[in-house]
Length: 466
Image (cartoon, rainbow, N blue to C red; front, side):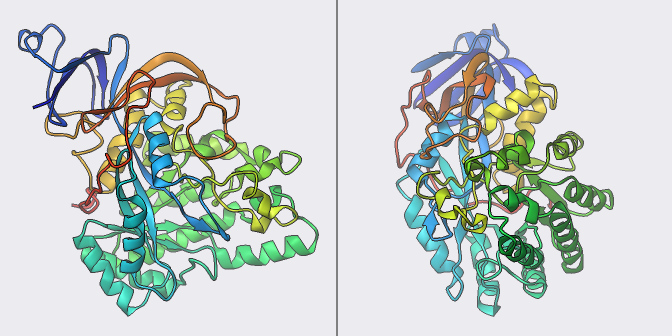
């Protein structure tokens, strides 16, 4: 039996903050005890970690990543190996990635392909959502089978006609199926049909720079789609999780639905909290680095997002990590913003950026852990195995130095992408040591993990619905 003791730290979970020593046995949290406790003094261990003046927090749960994602004729630059290693560097110990159904093919085919990509390559534990690109009788029946295998959430797109797009009828049918089988529908809420008209008009008028990506994907078309998705979910009697919420008007739709007591949830991402259309407008095509969908919004939207996180009208911060290199990938859209691959790197920096939000007074320490660890674990059927530090939980634990200073940069990050969306940003707080199921993955700022340590997680259904 392997034993590790973490001594002298401030244990921060979504529920409480307490000075405690933590005992780990065979990859699980075995006990917590107050420092100086006579019982705890007697703990023997193969390894002792000194967490004096540090936080001891649950490993982050990033419920929205896209490793090796095909998009626009290319692929996301991070593999499951490089992406999960970068996640570990940033204090994230669980990801839930998106397996993709190709139109005309079975869900099973897409899921099997993603299992092959990930198996034996991940440094941390991982699960899958399923992207539904082709809603029909066969794929609806397959949804039931996937829920039984622990793939309990399904993403639909109101955007990207001709690629991932589902019409309202298909969305309703998928929601009805989820209502029956316990699955959670995740929605990319943008009116893709209207957006395509605006894209065509912008290009015809010579408006081709990256900034126009944000201008045509209007906030009103995000809020309209969010409203429509909520109403379809009400008709179907299904829960709804809206991904990457970026606009104040969309937050208002979620807030109204939740005020009615509906099982509607919202996620935002660090890019919407810390970046804006000012970045999209950077000269010399630099704005292409910030092209993602939903798009970055004017900075005044940030206040509504922070407020939503404080009031729990937004429950989760995930990354939507989908990196494309500037050279050779983002550059595909020179002269036509619609050809810029949509996506940004971020899996490594979420925990640090949200700690900076604590430092800046946007959220509390416990709320930091709630939106980054505990709530995504509950939302996607992983709690209390993941997302907390409690007896019986997996020992996914981060020793975090709240006073360390770092400067984010492409020169020092570990994501497989040639730029940083936060180049030069100074952050207070840094990961020092990361355990995944009790095994050191980052040890005193050195990578000690390995591809293949990470295991596939068969997930329960959403724990906010039972």
